[in-house]
Length: 269
Image (cartoon, rainbow, N blue to C red; front, side):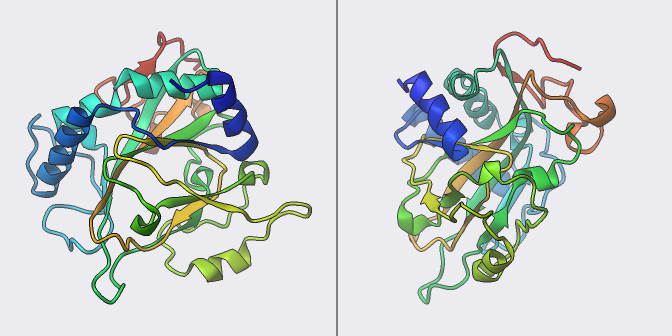
């Protein structure tokens, strides 16, 4: 079991926390992996499709698979995302009374070809850049759950240590493919350094990162798909702008979409 004080201290200091060893059981990982494959074929065992997505069944399998709210469409994926161990660790690193999922993404990064080409990058970005639906200062963060063995060769996420203290820079491009060009634009504040830390995780491992932490990932050179889910989370210290329910907060009050995964629902509205 993770030491709560140590985990929280690391998250606060670095802007991320890595649980590299499995947090979730092997059987659940296997069933959720089968669920990912079913979604890619357009098979939904709940009878409900995901939300409209960047990638849809029949699309190019060599581009980044990014499917929104996949838990709606598959029971094993729902079971994985709502596993109590995720909520408990999320609460431990933030000190939260309760934790709610407010959006999710299923992500599969295909492997590069024999020449090392064809595997997409994820460009350097701060999540907060895309999350303008939330009031300033809202406690928002992400749990990234690995389903495959995310080795150094698999194109793991790379976090920039301490960048959550740099403020919102408005220099983010999730789909950017030229990391070096992006890096030239993102200047570290005086007295700080750009230090990248790879999130190397076993299947069932989880990373957590702050909404202002810069992160991105390179090509997958492992020869196997890099499989994961991104669970975007909030605590009781959060509120949508004008308390609106639209865009990314549209389903906030519907537990089928946005379950509370730790504590009682004592949200501040």
